[in-house]
Length: 99
Image 1 (cartoon, rainbow, N blue to C red):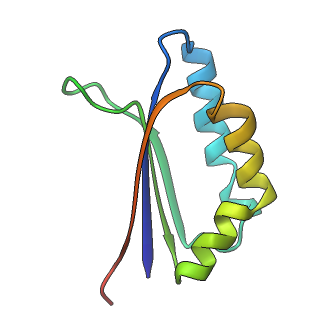
Image 2: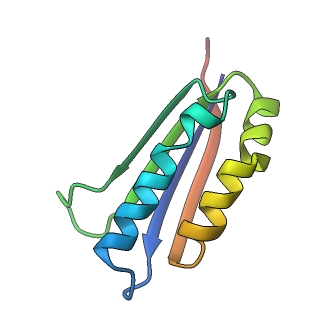
């Protein structure tokens, strides 16, 4: 199994409403993308300084399923319309979960 983790920081001009729309857009993806085994999205709780603002953790059966998710029209639309215009910094990692 492959786990995908992505973290976002947004520009100072990004409003709370825009951040909420990003979370809503991401949370709407699972019913549209069958490759997603698990999918969790959430804003940072603000418990410590210097953190990213939103996290996504997704699991896929294999690397091909992950690639199909990336290329899926619904994922691309959320990235293009809701995330990229506001993102200041992005970090991601994909790793294998031993099974």
